[in-house]
Length: 194
Length: 408
Image (cartoon, rainbow over all chains, first blue to last red):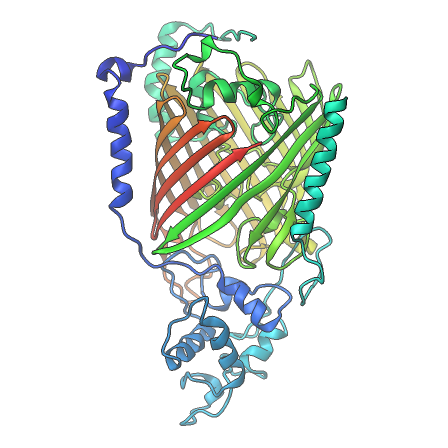
């Protein structure tokens, strides 16, 4: 292997340049502040709340299929989520979303512009964003898109993946880790003997 | 230790000219390829198969790769240069277990935390064991690990083996059988493989890896790949047969991916990549009949011993969007051995949906408008097998990402 040579940077700056560079990198870390954020956890919360076979796509609330941070949720269903959040005096969050969704399922729609209200004041109907047939949550649980007449496709993940509306009785948990450790221990012992 | 000789016999003037023009070329053309730590090219490691079982780099380390991780990767506290010491036993699997030459074992434990908009989150980024068994010219290998991601996450799920909708799942990023032939210059593999495309960097959330869907996190596909590695050419082509850990079949992408890199000096390489797939329905956008492509160039160059420059620029084609692009340029400066400062610039526009106007969509940054990101990073390989990393990621939001990584 060729011996390490001092670089042109080192020759030029006697090594000090390295620490200037480090400082230059570190300073801006503390100089920026945050902006709006996305909520990748929301689809999972919707799935859990209504025991769906898979998490709904971002299109349930966003118009862009892969929303970027800062993309506002502009779908009709999202308007209803916001309306119930306002009625509860909160904003949609990981903590508040399950209760908001349950409100949408069971309470008269808080969004007076929703088609489910049919112009009634106060609204007595459940939310029905597209004004077709079933209410939002009934459509959602049937794998349909509450915003329009389309379906909500449901890719499944894992080998031989199938619809599992409920958690398996025995999900992957610490047992697997213990079994893996035991297997590793046996292997190590055999390797040492061998 | 075996001494490596340079394959280069090009006229010195030509090599110098390349060193002048390649940085410019990488900005304008950009594309590259290398191992997990692509910047190892600064140590004249321009090939990947020397240190990794995967001919295009990543995951399982060869015994030689383990030795180099102890000599070159980590901070040394004894004041000796790598040439003055021999690799210790600590470079073995788990830090002590010397495996037979035909057995390569490894693993990765990467624990991460993020602060986004003031909200702190801790999660396991990687909990993997991997290995490869060799029988003469034939071999078989793979990885097994655990993941814990929410149901809506774009990460990990495509590599799941078990089917929990969210929470803990068993996952396998790679599994394959293969053989070497042609004096070890050719490698044929079949199984779930990393896609040969672009710079093989560990930063799987770089736009360039996410937009092209070619990261090593969970974007692997099942297929057949043929790799060729000589002193000056690294190439791999793969027939993509679909990801059989995604169901039903309509979500599986089929097509090709290839990477070709030629060394333009002892510490400089330039490459081209191309990928094209078709799926009846895209698993992320859920659009139907999606033909997706990425075509670009990459480069990796060491300027002096401590500075490495990596870059990639790709055009993005998609039958459901306008033409897009994505790219990055990263400077990696090794302040002292094992301590790295990195500055990365990213740019991306994935293209505005073709039905966007009909749906009354507005062009946004990254989707119809250019988006720019900056990563300010520091990594310290402070002990054998162990490193810490901090990234300040300035995109439309700000993320402070910290990682503790142990490779087994």
